[in-house]
Length: 214
Image (cartoon, rainbow, N blue to C red; front, side, top):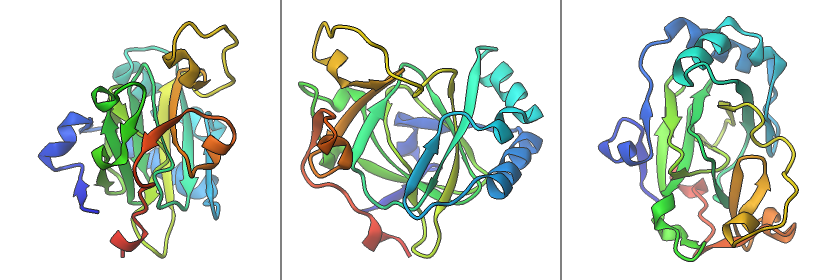
């Protein structure tokens, strides 16, 4: 699979690079490196106290999310597979203490609540580069950028996202994709999420970039 970069023009369809915030990025990267683990698999924490209490978190929330309450968590570990795609009704902020790769597609490419994995593109984000992933971009857990190392990535989202799951009677098929607060999920049939009952909405191969990284 061709691995593009977030500096390539193609990325503008999915997100943008956030300029500035040098001191804030430094604080976040240090906290990620020193206070969050790198599991053998992949783990996600929606809100991490060591990140949430940083002065950087308050500044970023005030500017990038216009003062709306935000939560700062992380997604760390080792991963090379697509498995799922999700979207929110909001942008997501990512910043890696390591290089990482995102597998992305566009919501507009979903047809009848399904998308073929051939629509997915891979983007390398170097450590220290902060990005906004648009609400219209389908994404999921990051992938490692190197065979011999994992990833540590900030996940900044509106407060309450991915925390619990709303209880209601679905009114349409999209409602059935909700697996957590502000989270709509499409799973590949091979994924553990599909085996747990998530909507199988990814057709084609379950992308694995293991042979594309060094």
